Amino acid sequence: MAAKSTAAKSTVSKSTVSMKSGAGLAAALGAAMLLGAGAGTAHAAPAEGGASLAKTDLAQALGGTTTGLGYGIAPVKDLRLDPWANSSADVLNNGATVQPEDTGLAPVSTSTLTGPLSAGGGPRDLPVVGQLLGTLPG
Image (cartoon, rainbow, N blue to C red; front, side, top):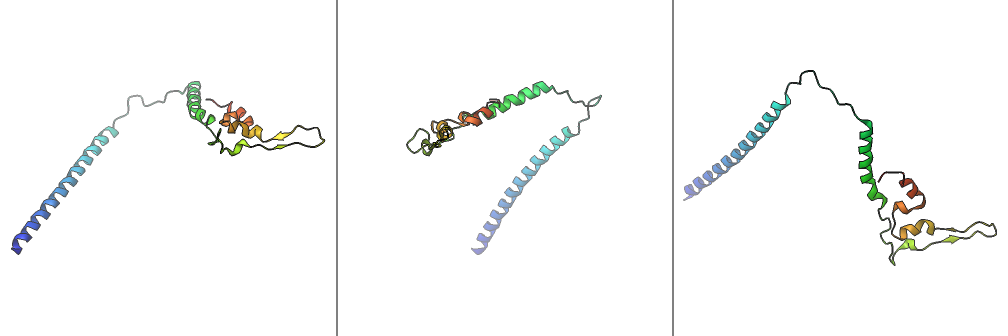
């Protein structure tokens, strides 16, 4: 009985090896076909008269860049900076005001800066940054 079980084990191991080598052979054949097809196109002869680059239209290239930049910058301009805006947990809803004594100067308040943010605004709504962002496309 011991001889039969040994013979069965060797048959199973031989079929497993042949299946693995068959899969490896198929993968190697596929890679060779892909590399062979790419190599044929890589050695194409240049066209008669040589290659030349087309002239770049600067106005059209700048217009395309400005348009693409506008689509990328516009969402950033309107990004909500205060996630707790218009809620009871908003820490920017509080303001501090300083009133100089006997100098005739107007009071200075933090609500000028934090007011637009606590109302749900973005960088476009800030006093100085909004003016700078207005010069960008988008």
